[in-house]
Length: 391
Image (cartoon, rainbow, N blue to C red; front, side):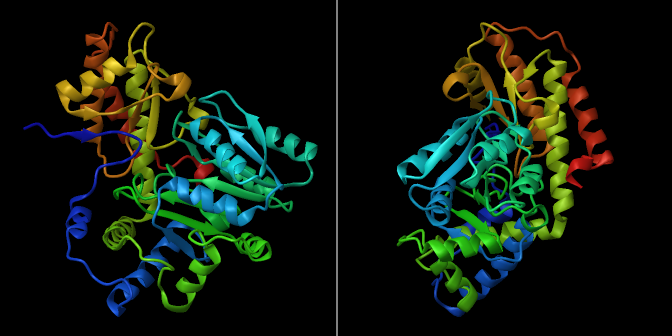
């Protein structure tokens, strides 16, 4: 009878209003009622992304949007710089390789952020590079890359900045037009509080010009065709996931009601809560404070404690579902998700489950006030507001 709490970096819990919308009866995607709803969604997506350009909705995972970005923006044989700081940085490289785009990989240790100087040096070494591909939030490590500073660097050159915002959009600020991002994409199952199955992609004016020049031969991921449908009659090129888009309409209305500043402030406060509590428990954090992502905290487990056993204990004894590390971090970290429809009560339950599971698996925590420490950090962050760098 206990409530299950989903504290993973996606999928995330669904608000009741979204669940009720998803349960509504089917409508036809070419009829006036639904096209009017798509028009409202389009306005709200542009507001969410911080852009005056169309935001494309696609029936696919976030990886599909990553693939569409590479296919439409870059030609075979062109060079791109890829920031590899985790599993999803690696994915950029795999997509580029599959489509014969020449990937120049610049790597950083997992849990660290790329520096602007590192990218600047790579651009100087490879002056014919056409794009820089990076994660805003590297979901496999909990590190945040300096998108704003990278955009300032690339917009001075004929270089596209392509940003995977799958675990950032709706969680932390990334206003496209203001910062000068050329391509921003995300998925539905994280900050947008929806089931998986939708992805979103927006391009800057100069990025659209690049797509027009490339004339990519794409049938399904046809961004020019999708843009034409949006501009002409608020439709999609192919049959969309109707109920997911209806749920998105509800979610975006919730964002409008609260305001993005309030949404971001809450996500920032939950991040500070988990980080402070984990440190109070004597645990280390994979990403440092100056480059930690919001909505996800990667917590390093004590030596000798099996991460798989900790996750199983959290789920079986306390009904708390968290995620483990990937690849070289498997068994070494817990990825504690606190994005989307998660509140401080859910986080407190997650912290307690984590503390008790570590103890049950052979670890030790001397802290008796880790939850109080977390709550103090949460309330202080709410009161102080967002970090100056994001204002």
